[in-house]
Image 1 (spheres, rainbow, N blue to C red):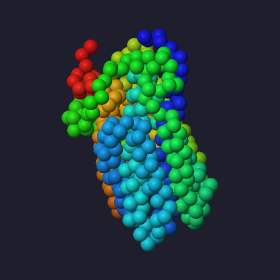
Image 2: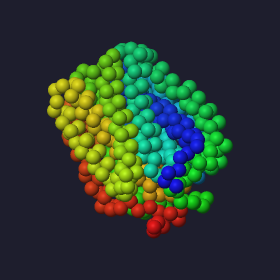
Image 3: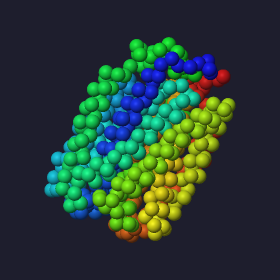
Image 4: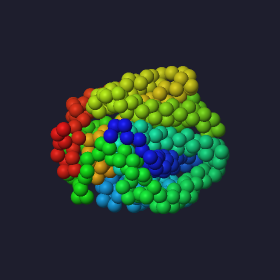
Length: 432
């Protein structure tokens, strides 16, 4: 079975759809972070106002992770993904209709709806990878679709820079673009997606390859209440605390560059391009590395955790961003931190599909991502208040925590889950 070569490659078409959906997701999600220096002047927001708008996104995102993650496990990836992208597209476009008289409330409502819908992207994508790829390929596949987050984040400043004037004219248009892109994606997804065992374009050898290291499962549903007490769930949830760092790069990165180096809409494109190209490289390499180690005979536990350790070490230099006087040194260090985070993310997402039955993956991803969103809420609130009170010195402590957090979290994950023991379809330990 280890030498089995698939006779078709339809799984990569499915992976390409995940990459496109994730690109749209992060393009939509990143727009406000790119526009905030302009909108803050246009609408007269304080740093705390902006923090509260971001908190509205993350509160809804956290709640959505519980609701939509479990819903995707019940509805299946085809219907669940469609529902998720439909919700986030509607609320993404609603940003364009917010008026100055109620800008904080209006953007808060629009961001909340966007967050609730976008909460379904990663549970659905991780579940799809578990359905379409064997374990040895899942980290690499996850790394590829996870890399699309950076593509979306790169496109956002480019599109904004081409369309929006420095005085804020045309700021609404980028929020409307994603509606058309999402409609096209949903049409293709509904025409394309079926489980591999039901898909007429999947050859017998490819199906055997996909299922080469999978345990057969029954169709009984598993509620998130049943997976909540499991050590595997909480190891993933603790690892997702680092999402707060990624949210900081995405939603506060443009503001930091504007505050520290006077970067604006006309010249933000190149710094974001550098940062997120590095992040893309990290996502793909991190996913590849652990899989390559497993193919050399390393245990799953050793390969995943060594890769996570290397990620944490790579991220450490981001601690020094706030004390550099060079814009490009700051951009490179943030990019290095983003690369390490994306490599980290590719491996912690596969922790779920490595240890949990496929029918529970979306629920577990939802629980863990909810914890990550709560960490982001707390960091937003603290950073917004500190910036209003202490000015740019607040960034020093933020970057210091961003650089050192991963090593601490990895130590806790190892204590919770010393070995990455898998659970069967009834959530009992697999003994083999």
